[in-house]
Each structure stands twice: as structure tokens, then as C-alpha cells.
Length: 403
Image (cartoon, rainbow, N blue to C red; front, side, top):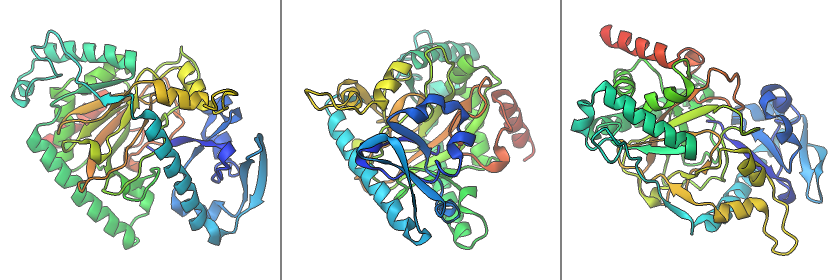
């Protein structure tokens, strides 16, 4: 998903063209009061938009007065260096945050599904294949309770090891093909890759629906695991498929800054999006696992997260205090396991210092009560707003029969 981030004014972060081009006022109607805080909510635009937008007056906050917007004209030929400076500042902030959070992080644990005969979501791949619909429903109910409460839940053995291996090989071949298509100007970058923060050694590869392996994998997830049932038990079966993609973090990718994917304006708001990350390989600490801060999908946590006013005595901001003291969980997922999380939960991707790429196949489902959630989905254009949970399953069955 194209990242929604809070850019800190006191550091003099230069805002992207979203402000002057009307993206905030027109594309983010749901963000409301967030634009008035010390953080300015922006969307990192794709590189191909820079030259068409950057020549307009660029808005930024002055270090001495975060509430005052100033304008300057930035020549188009300075765009690459400005983008690199933006990323450098974000990398530096990510390092600071990693230090703040290092003593409170622990591996995410699998949710216990009582009544299903398992202790870790599902005990084995063979047990998964034979699970009865009633057991899946019971497991989904338990997972949904944890998801609503903490904002993130781990379910093991969603894909078999063999399926995960095949899917990993598929996405890397797909990326190679997509990169070649972009190089040859056959397609635009945005038609194959979604926007992602700190894109060096990191990509968000959107997935087509027609390929056999994708169809089989999605249908397996829908019918043989409690993953989508967990989501639909909260959002309903009219929840829309909002994303279908694969996040790939190659060796050398940097740690992202913490962020929610969508804002939280009230504790009475319904969930907006649930994202299901499925590990296509065992994820170890040095591969830069996703870090989630559970119980932050509420207005109190978001308000604290947005407040960088230093304490007069300690010098620590409420945001840094939250990052330092709130327990976080690391997505050290075994191959084929899944983490489902609420889009309002504060999280980030880690730095990959290993020699192995980390691939997360994922899909997101949007509440039917929500229009535009405040962040564009990572999904092929032809799939946008096309399927609900119910119609997706029907389409996948149809595609299987057509072989």
C-alpha cells in the first residue's frame, strides 16, 4: 500500500507536491483534522509524477513555526536530489525509532484456536487440508476476537511449504518480467508496481488474477483456512478486495518509519482495512520483519503518535514515549504463516541485513461501509473495486473450471 506517513516539521522535512497539487484536499477527504497537526499527512507519489507536479509551488513547514506553511519553487532538475534527501531523513528517523523500540520487541506468537484441535492456528499442513467447515468457522471466530482486540493476529500453516515455495518462485519471475516490461516502455511502472516508501531494494509488486498458481492459492486461502473468514466475520462477506500484491524486501533495504496505513478519527469508527501478510519463506530477524505495535488502532494512540512536542523536563516527545514504552511484536513468521492486521495499527517494515529477499504475498479487504480509505490500494487496475469476498470465491472457482 502507498504509505501514509507523518512528516515532522521541526526537522524541516520538505513536503512532496501533495499539498500544492490538491491531493490532500481532493484525494484524502477522510483525513479531516489530521492536516492541522504537527504532522502533515501526505502520499509519497510515484516518481513519474514529479516533473508534472514539482514545478508548482512546493509547500513546506519552517523549523521555527510548524504551523506556518511557506512556498518555494523547486526546479524540476533538482527533483532526484530532493527525493534522496527526503529518503535520507526518513532512514535516519527509522534508525532512531529502531533504537527506541529495541527493548520492547518480541516475536509475534501464533493465536490459539481452542476447539479446533490445534494450538497454533492449525497444527500441520495435513491437518489443515482435512479441517471441517465448522472447525474453520470456530477458529475464525477466535482469531477475529484477537484481531479486534489487539489489531494483529498470527495464523500458522496457511499455505503448505510446497505452495509457498512455488508462489515465491512465481512472484520473483513475475517481478523480472514486470521490470523488463517497464524498461521496454510496454507498460508504466504504476501498472506493475505500487508506490512504496524507501523503494531502494524494496518493491510492491501487484499480482494478476488469471495465473493458475495465484487462483489456486487464493482459493485455498478462502476455502481451507480461517484467514478470510476471520476478516469477513468482522467486515462481512461484502468486504471488497482492495489489494492483491507482494511486498519484496531485498538485502540492503532500509528500515521504514513507523506509520499506520489509515488514520483513526474516533474510537467508534468501524475498521477500515484488514491486510493479510503471508510469508513465502521463513522470516528471521536479519531479514527485517514487519514490526507491529498492538493496541494502537485507537484515537488515543494516534493522537500521541502525532505529537512530537518535546517534554519541557525530559525532552522526550509523546510520540517517542509511545514507541519506547509500548510493547511491539516482530513478524518472525514461519513459511506459509499469515499475519492479519488492522490498517490503523502502527507498524513498519525492518531493514534487511541478510542475503535473502523477504517476500510477503498479501491481500487486503476493505469495509463496505467505507469509501476511499485514505490510501490507494496495491492492486492491478483491472481488479480495482471488482470483487467482494463472496464474488471473489465465485470467480476463482469459475477460473479453475475453465482450465
